Image 1: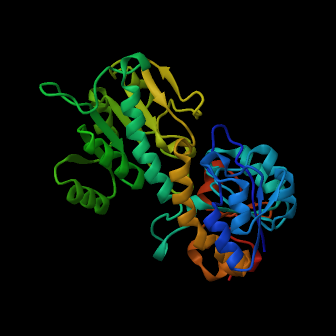
Image 2: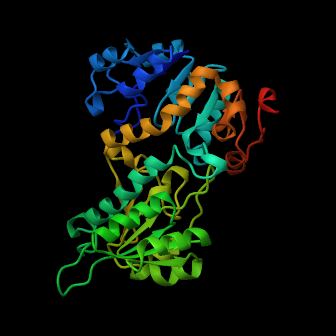
Amino acid sequence: MIVGCPKEIKAQEHRVGLVPSSVREYVNHGHKVIMEAGAGAGINFSDEDYKAAGAEIRGTAREIFDEADMVVKVKEPQPQECAMLREDQVLFTYLHLAADPAQAQGLMNSKCVAIAYETVTGRDGKGLPLLAPMSEVAGRLGTIVGSHYLQKHLGGTGRLMCGVPGVLPANVMVLGGGVAGFNSARVAVGMGAKVTILEKDHDRIRFLDDYFRGQADVVYSSSDYIEKNAPQMDVIIGAVLIPGASAPKLVTKAMLKDMAPGTVIVDIAIDQGGCFETSKATTHNDPVYVIDDVVHYCVANMPGAVPLSSALALNHAVLPYGLKLADMGWKEALLADPNLRNGLNVCRGEITYESVATSLDLPFNPAPAELAA
């Protein structure tokens, strides 16, 4: 199979779909890898590094899309990339379609086979192993950027996250105790903040309670609790995920008026539409905006701020699945692995993931005929 990796073109996105060590594995499996020139430059991998790993270099993204049987990326394809996809070409990347009808339509028009990292499931259908590493990064970053924007000259309350002797630390509320929320809370606890984690799943609540052992308060999530306690928070981190679906709006615009001026909210769920009613996607170039004196940080590719760590972690997780697709072909690979099959979001013009179809109000086709068995 010809495996292609273009340079990411989303604003301030420096990650890369294939690092040289991944290229070498594909080549060792007998596949041809083509890389767009400069694709790894954002994390200091040169074209020579890729050539040494066995890749061939192409000058443009168009050449990558024209030649490759499977395109491996990081972020969702931008409109000009959707236009270069073709029928039965495999696209393996993050998609986050539930909040992006234009991208969904572009993928449907191309009739490609779009497999989303974020809906591939783990053993026994549990967990999201290809989303987990970026959720870990985003969760940890969420607390770091929240602490950063608490500074008064950046619009925050002026409270130091960890406090100082005789002065209370910041109050941090984490909405969701999954991978991202857990990692946000870990960093916040480590920084010395007063942390509250909101979660609905009782098994997860018990895990969080056992893990933090009183270092963080773990509370059953409810609208009533959020409404009553949000005004006391310095930082609120939104980390709620419903796989493939739009994130629920847990903090309404009306709640902002009761919050202290300079409260910081960080919406890690912005890729899925965000869990604050006032959230709108931002970029690393212009990461924050203010509504009702509340600072909103809603960068849609947070891990792109630390692309070296992020790209390596992502490649380690994705590589076994990518090799399976290349070795077996997409049909046989999806038939053989139901967890990988859960990653299929769009196929030959049809939405094949139910939560995406529901969120976008589009027809749902469970699977193409070849996978119906």
